[in-house]
Length: 545
Image 1 (spheres, rainbow, N blue to C red):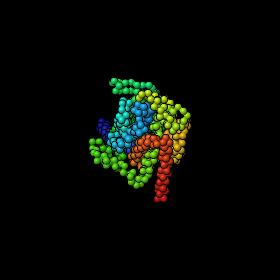
Image 2: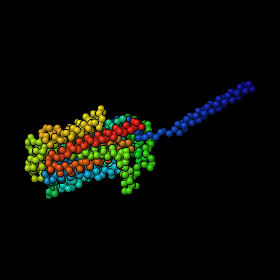
Image 3: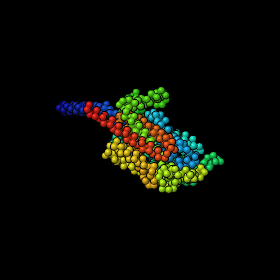
Image 4: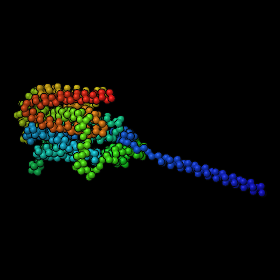
């Protein structure tokens, strides 16, 4: 028994020691595991910048849906700026317009754009992308719809001015807004595709005009104080497309890049997760980035409108444009502004007058040249007016659709060519071709007139895009947005100038306007050669240093 008791005690002590060792082992294990988890929790994820964050969202259904929704958006500005050219054959009879009044109708939209360019640029930096797109397009639609209700010419001009004011922001912002939903790999390609889709408006708008303006529509309300006829119905129909674009923009998300710029990182992260989820099919919670990094300092963070005074607004605007008036950007930027001034002058002065020119040729009813048709239609064109209602020949808009189809097709060809040929040389070739074509244009007739019209509008439309692209690639990323806005503003000034001087020149002699446009085309050739020389000298300086 004593032996048994001793043995039992030894066994009990061993069991206690084993349990103690086991407990110590578990405690150490728990401590070790706890320590590991604590170390992991202490490791914070690295904040991601915009390019890193957008690259992790992938490319899929969200991006494709954005591109589809973007198509109506690209059409709105062209619908607003081009509608006067399609209604002119009818409005000319209704209001008995002089050539100068016709020019003021064309230029009113662009005057509105120029006068509001800097204000829009400031608002974009303070209120955001999506909101301004929505309200700008909505206001543009309202102005276009009201234009279809006016009964006096000066009211129509004023409304087209405000339509230009409303359209200026969305036109400049649209491409920027779209690009901020794509990574570097797809961004440039998508912006080019969007530009190609926008040229579809050159086909769609004359198609709408073809079905509506030649119709014999004349409704009178309020004892004749309110008249709704063919050209007014056309303007109101154009506004429907604009309202559709506003509705689609309302359903879009705010730009995540803007949200990061104003410090709204939670909202930006929510947009990134949404893009990631729709592109990959994975739940939003699996998006690999959880912290975003601000790309600007706290001092540079964009502020809200209530804190902005007029003096701050002027100071901010001057800071944005100041680099373009100082070296090394003064000379090249000034030449580029002049280049787009002349390019858009030649394009839009000619393009906006095409439907009216076709109406004159058709009214002449003969195989005559462009200028012979004009001089012989002083009586015949007036006879085409029945009271205040113009009997517009549908052939006007068929020809416009042919020109629009050529513009649409040539734009996609140009996108392909830019992969293999320098943009400057493409611009030089098109400037020479355009100058020669418009020089002989007044003495053409029949199918030759139509072919030259289509080629000239197509190549000058491409040249306009090339100048904007040249300007964007010539300045640093930090100045790129303002550079594009400024060069477009000078281009619009050119459109206003052209539409005011061409009617005056046209009253002197028919050939003079076309020869003036040819002079601007060849002047563009000189400016682009100077810009290329400056670029070559800059590259030599960088190489030698």
